[in-house]
Image (cartoon, rainbow, N blue to C red; front, top):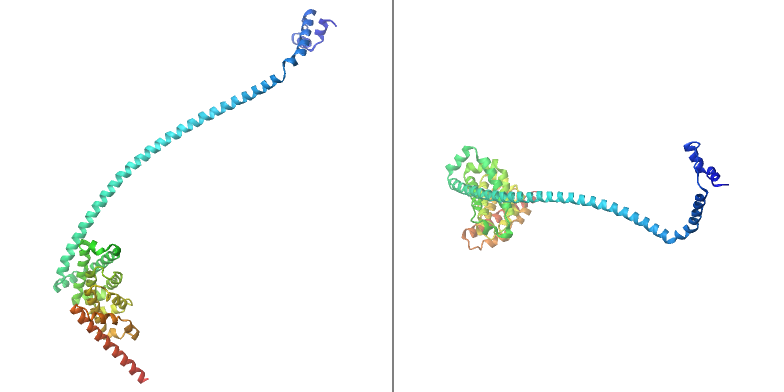
Length: 356
């Protein structure tokens, strides 16, 4: 087969023939032989050229290309993270600015709060001073029976007694005996205020119409006075205790008032506690209140032998030796009343047993 025939029979020639029609391409035999020689040489030398080093190099090139692509992706991620970081930083700066603004506003509000507290404290001190002065004047005025009658006629006594009881309760419950409140408050307007309130109550109860009003319409006040006397520890605000005890004693002059006071189960334990007070005036007023209970026949009937035995007889005997003359005399009288009452109840018991 010559070169022309081989070209005609090859796929390339047939494809070309199909593509361009019936035309043929002529190739010289010498050129074909040269081409064949070159192909054979390539087949012989190509495996020697393409060895394992080249394959390794190609593999490394592929790895490097892959790393370059990964580095490109990482760079893109890095740029994205940098953008996010810038965004977060801008938000942080905005929040820091807002926080600083809030701090400045809080500082201003704190200063305003301190100013308001100071003004409120000044107003409270003014009101307390005014109340102390007013109640002191009322205390002085209520020492006259005509003034008490005028107060009753005005019809404002009941709300006054209600406010007075709440004020006394608030004052006593706010005391902190651990910090020696007498030294802190004894000369204060607040102390003078509550003393004046207690004094007004005592003066009102000293008048017949006043004690009748309290006995009938101010039971809450009487309960509050007895409760507060029980809360105050020995040696604390003796003058206030004396005034409250005097108020209870004045009320006990009324039969209704004495009946109501004697019905309190805390009364005898209260008297027992008050008789242990270091102040002689407190002990004196407690004894007078006890005497008021013992001399009234309607109240004495409620006293059982057990109740009589619970009375602080031993403490009363100690008070008979007091240097305070009035206290000593009152203690002796109280002991005589107790002995008389004990003898009366003993005789009544024996008579009842013998009749059975």
